[in-house]
Image (cartoon, rainbow, N blue to C red; front, side, top):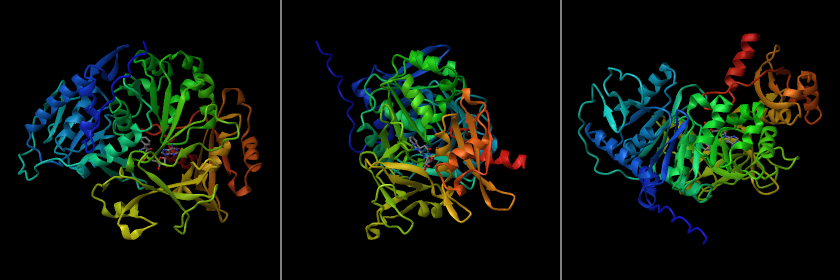
Length: 525
Ligand SMILES: Nc1ncnc2c1ncn2[C@@H]1O[C@H](COS(=O)(=O)NC(=O)C[C@H](N)c2ccccc2)[C@@H](O)[C@H]1O
């Protein structure tokens, strides 16, 4: 008797963020919604349990009499309690501002100064004595010094109201608050649901911190599909054996994360990747997946579904593209597709004209209902990012100027090829460091590469490469790697400096930390 397909999760058209994520509580109340790894075992919170805890938190929030739009800072990693609090905030129209517990005090103070939250709730630790500071847990919120009562004029939460604000470290180092409305997030979630990656009963391992919107993609992908999100404890992520144990114990069917989460497992315990019988999908985003590592993962897990997810926090994500299995040997750039269902990515040249020809680089502009409302308290930065539709400025429609460069492949799919603001002139020639990084990564002895731009002795811009060799290639010299670049690129693109290092530093979101590499160069100068 064929198994009757589980009834679909029914999503209404104009839902709030919390209503979208809890829809499965109506159709699958006893299915797992959050699967946590605790002391070597899984701890399951069902959709019914998650809804009940969220309702308890919502009742706790009502005590403070906050006005719709007032912010609640949540200092926590992803957990069942934190997801319930996030849902409670959304149900009351209180934008949540997620901050990692390991955020340096100064940065947290900056975010607090900018966001001016009415409440700052931590999952752990002693509540500070400051007004509005407190703790949450077990459905309870305790704030020793509650904020003063507000005069309230709002009557109802609307889809254009803010669901959350994510603070990213802007290129100038000053955090930029990306303001995302209920409408934008739900529009993105619908576009993602159309891809059908995850089904009822699946478990999506989430490896990003709650303050990184990749975690909100994971939560939406899982709960929106009637599946469970399985947060990987941050402290275990850096130990490959513990990381894989968490995936095994929580029976993860999908693992979402930046490419670097696989690095140590691929290097040190590749054989163990075959031991995860439930695993059938990996979604990665945030930066390019080094192709040698990607091919290694495919060899270890034939048939696994690999999804390259491209996008920026300003629209959560923009596109999903399936990686061919196996990835042909001559592929140098992964496709990022052309935008998920409901979006369209426009490619423009430096003059603002559409680029149609294959292989010609342009800048991507994103047309989407999932675009941010703007940057918190920064109208100028907002106007620079949300620009008039270049094809029809009279319409008033705004597109996100991504700052990302791409070209179209033979299949019509876009290929990411770097950032506009990382382009550099070397001896009068425009160079995209990511291209040099890709070339180095294609060397058989290289398992990771990063290229930064520093100032050479003559004051000119100079390309500096940091390379991690595969275990059996210790005798590869820097000169071999430079020669390898010169065989495929003009001399001005070959890195002036090649450093062989044991590993590349990653930032708090798991992306290669180019700033730290540059700092290392400057300190060694
Ligand atoms: N698949 C890629 N290949 C290559 N470069 C990439 C890629 N995905 C981003 N990027 C780069 O990362 C930038 C965005 O950085 S970010 O604003 O910190 N946001 C993120 O990285 C995460 C992003 N919000 C997200 C969250 C959840 C799913 C997908 C994407 C993009 O503009 C690209 O430059």
